[in-house]
Length: 189
Image 1: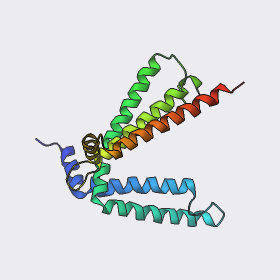
Image 2 (image 1 turned 60 degrees about the horizontal axis):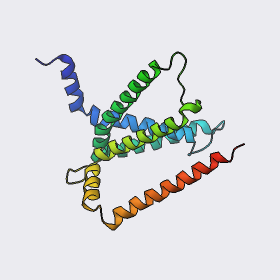
Image 3 (image 1 turned 90 degrees about the horizontal axis):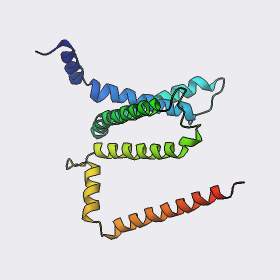
Image 4 (image 1 turned 90 degrees about the vertical axis):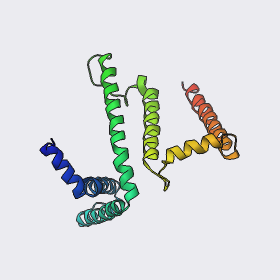
């Protein structure tokens, strides 16, 4: 027996709430917030405030409509966001377990020097995971995700010039970063 709530979800799905309305609202809100924060379309003045908000709203509306018009982008958003939320739940769970062993008080990773390197490393790992989630959400015309295509290309061309050049470049950049970051802390008095 199907519950009334399940019927409502099915109705909203058939209506296009998940494929049109929610992605549009998400993109509109994000673009509008970015435009308001950066003030790209004008600075805040006595007469310019309403004009700027109207311009920001129109640009955010157009970008939101263009995103909704592309089925591939909407599908990528719909498949990636649940995984990103799952990643957020994992992070919050980790922080709850971590804070059990620290005691009382506010846990602030940004001002605590003890966690500085760990926080940066954790943020880099999260960034890589989010990029992998979105690469897995975007599909080619063959139905294969960009992540699958990249791994197959990497495995098939491991000894090829492109892959070895990329590996060499990563090693060189890592060595430069290691040398530069190591020498700056040694000169402090």
